Length: 114
Length: 112
Image (cartoon, rainbow over all chains, first blue to last red; front, side):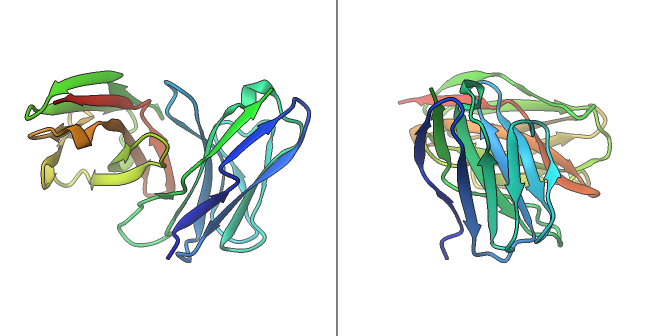
């Protein structure tokens, strides 16, 4: 099992460009999450999904859109990138039942917006 | 009320010593308190978690102490090793919403 994978690993964008980050999980998890991580600020939730075809806003959703067309995939889009979106982006997934709420993380995408 | 406050921001401990990281919360509806470990260039990974029906949970050298009345919980790393050098995050969630509320993180350095 690959767990949670993210593509690409690194990306440099110019201000105003758009891009899509892809997250895939092979654990049949219902819940998926997109976070951004900035120095000294921990992990901040951008958007999340509680199942195929559903999405919801997290703490910092502005400037991002998401889609969950297939259960195993969760896409994060930046329509018009800004330097403030320079960050490391992590995708995570978790099950929806039982006592374990463990979130499994991907390796991250390091995005720089010039 | 949704915040989880973590301290210290950074910590240096000698090899073999005890590392202690603290977290405090306000929302009494939180019922799940995990600690995640993150190495440079990697995603966070669950280290250990506790629920409020117990006051302590131990897994190897890692122990969570939980004080429900004070609304605080802490991570203790016994016999700290250089391989424990990482960033540690506490978090909390409620039964109605599996979203994790994260602390800001503690960068731990274990000196050989």
